[in-house]
Each structure stands twice: as C-alpha cells, then as structure tokens.
Image (cartoon, rainbow, N blue to C red; front, top):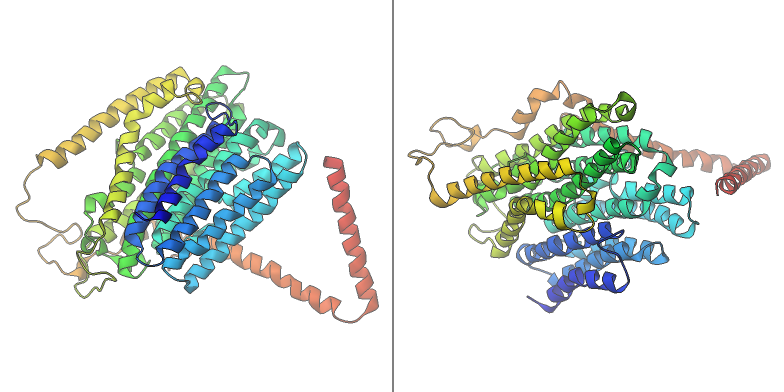
Length: 566
C-alpha cells in the first residue's frame, strides 16, 4: 500500500471527526450527512482496494483523482449553505480527469467527461443560486433543481448514460454508488423541511414513478453493459426520489396513519440507499472488469468472459442476485418493504393516495424490468460458453487478488447488513425514533427470514450437501454439444417483450428512443442560434434595434418576476 493510497483512505475517514468538531449534529438533524459520510468511508475504501488490482499504470494520478473526488464529496456534505458548497461540488468532477488517466482519454472517455461536467455544471449553477439567495421558497426551489439534475431525476437524466460509457470500472462504481447519494441526502437535510412550501409534490411524484419505469425498461433492452447499469441507476435514483417525495408529503401530517407511512418511507429510503451503494458498486466493479478483459461493452460480445476471468460464477452473481431479490440480500429487504408499504397505501382514502397509486403501477413494472436486466447481463457473461478463439486483454490466471477481495467484501456486506437491521431501527439515534411500531415488527420478520436464508446458502457452500453432478451440462445448450454457437444471446431474453413494450422505448440496436428524442430536441434548440446570427448579422439597423428592444423587455420582465417572488 503506497503513501497516496493511505492519504486517500484517511480522507474518507477524517470527515466524520471533522464534522463533529464543526458542531454537526450527526445523531440529530444532520443524520443524513452522517449516513452519506459513513457509506462513503466504507464503500470508498473498498473501491480503493479494487483500484490497486485493476490499474497498473499511473496509480499516483488515479489516487490523486480519488483524493479530489472524495474530498469534494465530503466537503459538499459538510459545507452547508456557503460558497464552499459549489466549490466542493465541482471538485468531485475535477477528480475525474485524474481517475481516467490510467486507461487514457479515448473518444468514449472524452464524451463521458463532457457529460459529467455538463450535468455537474448545470446543477452547480442552481446550487450557487441557492447559496446566494436569502432563505425562502425560491432559494429552496433552486436547490431542488440542482439536486434533481445531479441525481439524474426523470427528464434530467440525459447526461448519466453517456457519463458511464467511458470511465474505468471503479470510476463508474464511484459515480453510481457514491456520487448519486450526495444530492439525495442534501435534499433530506435542507429541502425536505420546506417541501410542502414548494408545492411540487403532485407533479414530481408521478414523474418519479415514470422515471422508475423508464429506467427499468431501458436497462432491460440496452445492448451496452455500462449503459444498462446506468439506466438501472436512473431507475434506483427515481425510486429513492419517490420515497423522499412521499416522506415530505405525509410526514408530520395531522393524521397519525399518514404520518407513520411517511416515517416508514424515510426508513425505506435509508435501506434503499445502502442497497444501491453496495449492490450497484458491486455490479460496476464486477461487470466492469469483464468489460476490460473482454475489450468490449456489448453484452453479446462478452458471452462467456466470466468463465475465463478467474472469478467464480457465484461471486460474479452477488450483485445481480441482490437486484433480483434473493432472500437475505439488501435488495430483498428494500423491495419487500416497498411491497409491504404499498399494501398500506392501497388502504388509504382516495384523496390521500390519488397521486401515488398511478406511480405505484409504473414502479412495480419498472423494478421488475430492472431486476430482469441484471439477470440478462449476468447469464450470458458468466454462464454462457465462451468462444474458443476469444482473446482477452489479460492472460488467464493473472487475476489480481485485490479484485476478488474487494468483491468479496462488498458481497459480504450485501448479505450481512440485513441481519443487523434490527439494531438500526431499535437503537440508532436519528433512525429509531422515526420507526413506527408496525414497521419494527416487519423488520424483525425480515431479519429472521434473511438469517434462515443466509444459513441455508452457507450450508450449501460449506457442506456441499446438494446432489453430486455426475455429468455437467451447460445452462443454455441442453445437449452434450459444448460449442459457443449454441450460447444464447442476451436478445433472446429481451426479444419476447420487445414488441409489447420495448419497441416504444428502444430501437432494435438497443439505443433509447426517449434519449435520442431529447438529444435531437436539444440539438434543434441550439441550432436556433444560427437563425439569430443570420438575422443580427444582416447589417440592417432596424433589425438591430428590434432585437435590442426585445432583449430589454425580456430582461425587465425577469427582474420584475424576481422582485415579486423574492
């Protein structure tokens, strides 16, 4: 372990005592910030171990990049409403330049950096507006806009798939598993107390439900592995946004039933953000390594690479199993709790649930498609027969133990944290007082079921009491022929649903129609500037004067609106 690794690892741990020294109430109002720093310290250090096994050149620059990245995240958590916030906000993006240095700056990497800076830059402008505006609804609306863009909320997500197309595996894991958490937790800390004053719940709740649906469907039909995982991130992000919108809508309600459901959704949000941080980080690290050694990001070109990677199929599948709701995993805890809370929402009066029930339909379908998307990636990559002429970028047997160590650590957390869930809902300040009694009973039931499931899985692995395989068959061949020609393509899994749902959202080649439409609309809007240039460069004095008058009127109207609402 070199000095740069040690310094970067310490930069993940020190923000917690620094925040305590600054007077942050980590067990009270600042608990969301504490949650973000703890997740970052644990998952971030695992990512650093992975970096040592994944990268071989320019480790110094990469660790400097992560020092800037994690420093920016920590500073954003601790800065509060100050000018330091937008500085640290952009510092996270600056670190990406160094993080990419190990693999070089290819066309994909450059496009990824541009998308990352675009999403971060636009959100930073809105965050800066909140910092400089006085306390009030307008300021918090700007903050809301900034965090929605940064967390890839529905319709503001366009930058995220492209941002994940170019970085190394550990970079994507850090963006999706840690960076996405920052805007969500800042919302809990600063916007949620003023949520009902903003008055956008009735609009954003259905949009979040549609975002879950769109993310799940897009992940399922995408042909690019990294973009499929990026769309899965959009699905998870919108699901967490929906939880927070419902918390803000119902918590503190005069009706105790609604207040308790609002509190329950806050606990579900914390469970889900832990699940997303662990499982999505695992997916990007494991699948990203297969993409690296297979020299491709297309699912069908990577068939069977997992068999040649040196990583066991069971370990490669931990993240997919979690998203597929395997009992005992964090994903199972999250989505089982969602179904339980949905049963409570259905029993509410229509006036209290009218904005939520339509979103639930989209959510259930989107989450189901998202779960299937992870299996659609896992089965061909890890279990299909590899092409014998397949050439890898690394020699077989050269797997660095740091990679398997980091994956095992994440896999252990995915299945062990659910067993400790009762400790959080009963004893942890900042959470325990929020939990309704019926949810505590539900958590106990889930924990017992998860413990039984984990013991069952361990008994299979340790005691080998399953039947002995006398003749091993391949999952997708069904005969004695072991040729790679019979390996089932990923499209075989998705094509049965393409005509019913996929064709409305994706082209045959896996490109999203929705994102393509948004990009073409943006391109058309920007091209309108050519019309402006053609007009103002005509040399006609009356046209100059008319454009100046229109600009003055628009500016005056903007100043008037700000004066009225500020």
